[in-house]
Image 1 (cartoon, rainbow over the protein chains, first blue to last red):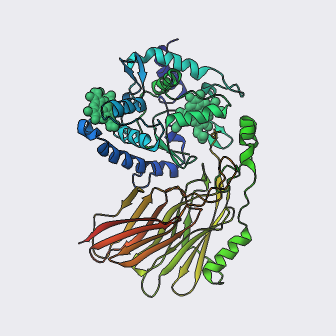
Image 2: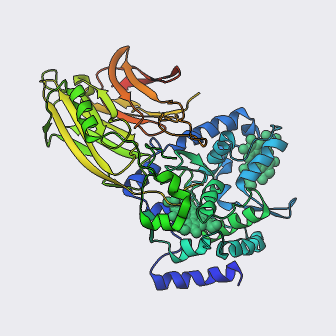
Image 3: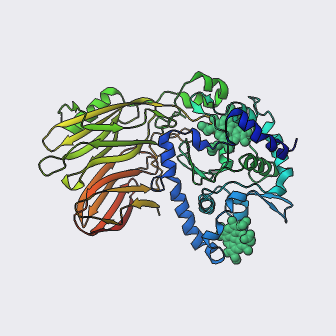
Length: 242
Length: 156
Length: 106
């Protein structure tokens, strides 16, 4: 079944369950953490947004992009990239633009400056609903396959935790639906801001499986699927998570 | 990896079973401070005086936190904050981190109010104690119990 | 250079008690945490925060390893006159960061 057919059933299912579409990880946090995320003067992720803002000016991005014009961009990534004939995610697009148009030497995907730039760009879309790129149906189907595949020594699929067990608890921790709408985000466990890829690494090694290489076709497909199933959720960057 | 100020010291069986050996390294009990060490640190702060348990001081901290790395805490003292009657200092202590001290803040009548907020690291579920030093030489005390649950899916 | 977020009301009326909120980028490495090889990471924390109003100390806090990474601190001040607030964070390995903000009292 294609992910779009499946999504066609979602509203009905939601009605039956009395829920309304996907639920952000924000919803199941304690009121204290929700308050920390909401408060721009207290959200530690805002320090990275500030750093990204400074880099955006210093690295010459601002010469071609008005920050305000970036509003909405993060809500429609991963997007179809004609040159690649497949998906590119926001981190990939920023890296590409930075190297090819701003003429900067490449930086590791999860280096502090790249995370900061990504936070700043994604923050411009805060509050806007995720609108998946319709051209990525194929990647999403592959991503869904990965999402449902059992893996690792614990032989668990993402779906088992983030669909079947979502809303329950794993030895004290809430099991969220596993949505990507807050990244890069400040995770208390990391005591730092980190990427969606970093979060996924944790879920892969948690079941003792080999993580997907960031930026690989499989990783992009999984990311495209995660954004597809989170359609409509608002971008929260920089979110706060335990 | 027995990081005493990281909250990864839980021993909940469910999680251990699920994530198997991944956590075993993290399970060594922290060589934490003790109630005695905390009492000593408080005595140092009060110069030996015994603080009184009082409703005038409030220690506002969530009773259940999802991750001990960043726990919001507010301490407030009901005080006119005048030259004649004010809070001179506020301190926070804990029992289970490697060190009993968390913060000591100095204020005065110019503060207008006696209220500070910060974020603490808690190695484990434990009791916290806030102490306020008053201008008349008295010390007030408030306590709170915090249960720290752990983030699952730790990075290997 | 550490990034900071400082929130001070733009204006205050005379006698008003204002809340000042500060957040600074800092790892607050506790000194109790081993690295991957099992060696303790050297302590690297902010140990002292001060706020001066027109060169007069109005708030001071001593911080320990039990303060979370990226220290957040709020405190109050009775606004009596316009002036300059100077914030300083001092820590291990000669860490020092200073910021100033104007306070306008009407």
